[in-house]
Length: 158
Length: 168
Image (cartoon, rainbow over all chains, first blue to last red; front, side, top):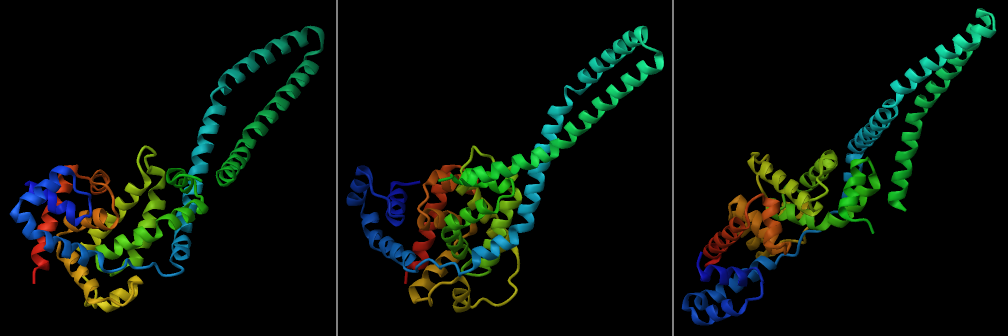
């Protein structure tokens, strides 16, 4: 690549010539000879005004993008839901294990002071209530995730 | 005001308003880039296809990069693919102008288009991005996926070719 190419390209693309390039342009007969042609070319390239986007183009694009946006929304919500469920399921084995030992100890204690059937009845009630609360907690996760996604979207526009 | 990168993150989570804002910001430069690249043919289709690809790939956008670079990369690739397709109908520059929303083409406009059309694909992309969009060589290189030296070399070759073509 020669200095001539550097200098003439700078001229064509409207860059300010640095001191070296300006000195080269002044001294180089080839560049001086081509200067007018390059400036004419720059004028030719600059002549046409850029085309204007037709009205309504953005609306058309947004309309066409709707299914893709809906897919993005589903995937984003799915990804958050998966993370939330993973975080929520992580302590579940420990909770179940502790509860198992708790129920077993409670049943053993109750049967020493109450008839076995009554002890079993109380323990069964406790276990059923516990299972119901657990199911409600995990069932609420998708609702919270959806709410979280909506809040985030609103915050990003605030 | 949200940055482009924040807006594309919103688009990745399905937010239409993010896309609307990005379209508003880049409508003119992107449209003009495609129009100059294709000589005014199929501009609206390519413009729409660019945005659909942006939305479709929004979740894979690397937040460490500039959105504008990514957007023009997609447009460059689409224009490249478009070039490989055979034309469906004979090209009428006046009709292409009307479709591209340009005012009636003057001789100078047709000259500029003829000159750009005569350049090889890679040189034309470099010239449009550098000359009409005034992007620095580093960003042109990032968009075209080549080293900065290659961009410089393409611009030099383009200038030589344009000078030859412009000679009466």
